[in-house]
Image (cartoon, rainbow, N blue to C red; front, side, top):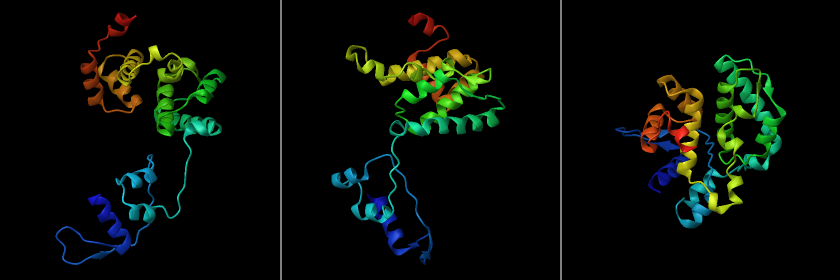
Length: 211
């Protein structure tokens, strides 16, 4: 709340005080703020300043989650396919119909950020010209919502994380280069991959031992 009060003061007075300065410096800025939380609820709970909320929400824009706008999914897939084609030097032409069906049925709890990571993952794995079902991340091919119908088979977040790391390492290899690529595709740092491998006791043979 302390920092919120300072930000509100800047927005109201349009002045800032530089560290070590004697005089205030006028500023003329426009603020575009985004959040994935309910600020209205936070205001009611007292964790977000009401005055700042009203100051920021002059022109509010609500973007529905990806699961509520499935018609956007093919457009986003195509955009990021082209992007990662250029970035990774690939010549992938598109997605198979089976792969597209899976992406349209998936809930995308991580929204567009998760979709971007999924496309990068698939582009890295695809050696031909079309992204097919086996090239998609495991969480898309074996969606968690399947487990919701059978409460006794729900997986913990740690299990899901472990499975995702194992899947990436199985595809990219256990070399330093493979671990770096797995980290990039999963959207984490290389240090995080090494730390998770140690935490979960993963080895090159751990997946074989689980089956």
